[in-house]
Image 1 (tube, one colour):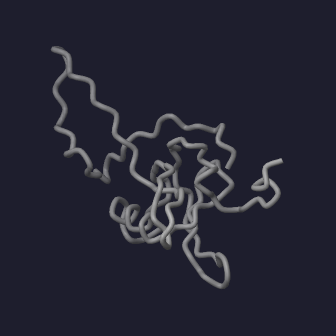
Image 2 (cartoon, one colour; image 1 turned 30 degrees about the vertical axis):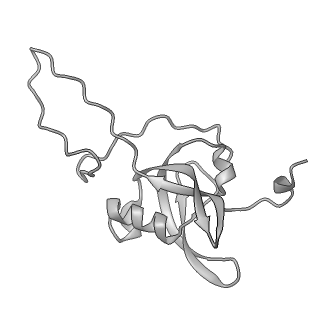
Length: 141
């Protein structure tokens, strides 16, 4: 028996990712009481049951891409990935977020007109968000 199975959580933990990058689509963000009387935003994803309690690092990364209003995050893609971070003097595994990498565009053929240039790498074009691919429903959260 795994002891972590004896005490399930309604929130995501880094171990839930099983050392993989997971593509998700934001469903909503809700303020919730987490821990001992502390209220934090919790991010929920389409087709997933567990929420991600947002810390400042992840909140700022999402806000930089999608804006400060969490209502504007609905339907937006994210990648969740495990990372080792410093926390109160210890190195622990945590969940971090980033935008999906855009798929490389195919080169136009001679009979196709060329398309406008894509925005520079690392930028987000609100009118044309990066495509979602590689959804992995085998992750049990």
